[in-house]
Image (tube, rainbow, N blue to C red; front, side, top):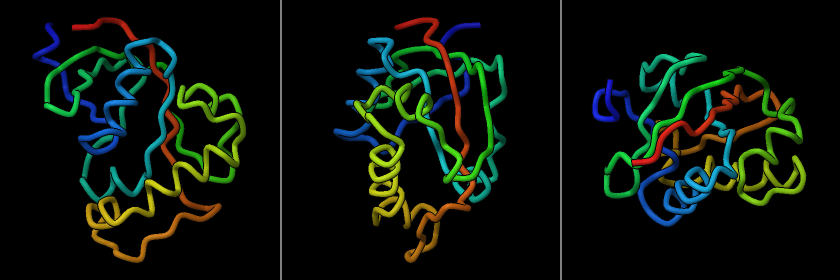
Length: 139
């Protein structure tokens, strides 16, 4: 199986944030990520599975890397731990800082539009898909 045969995984929306996330994935500093369970439910998409390999796409839609899922947990937003926040590789030094950064994205007009809920607000009980992965190939 080649990188072109694998399902795609996108980090954020195309643009500066995705570009920063791709850079830390390629550097090996990003080994975890978080998504709203609502994003998967809304898109009727299955959750990633441990052992699954995914092709990472950049802002131009190019497949730039392959990652392998090593852990997938569905947890409450309030239960995200410090190690997960640190492993996101975005420079967060506390769970509060991680949460503020993610809520800024999750409360953005762009994500609210994708969710079909202009008033979406994350709270302690919001279900988060906390994922760990390893970089196994760069294109």
